[in-house]
Amino acid sequence: MFILSRIREVYDRGMSTADAVVIDATIIRGVLLPASMKLLGKWSWYLPNWLGWLPKLEHHTQPALQPAPAGA
Image (cartoon, rainbow, N blue to C red):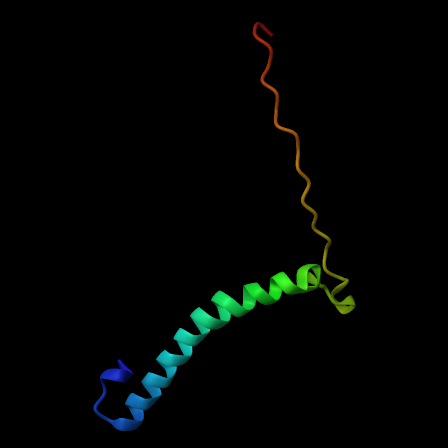
């Protein structure tokens, strides 16, 4: 709505906000973030020591349930 304003300052604020959103959504989150996470590997999931009080959550896979034998 700011872009539709006839007041130059309001229009400029709207355009700069729209530009910032487009740059953030495409370049930063679409290109730079995945590339940096790929380069950093496990280091991108580093947890600082001062957050050691957080509970440790682990994911364990369970074997698939076997169907019951017929007639049981």
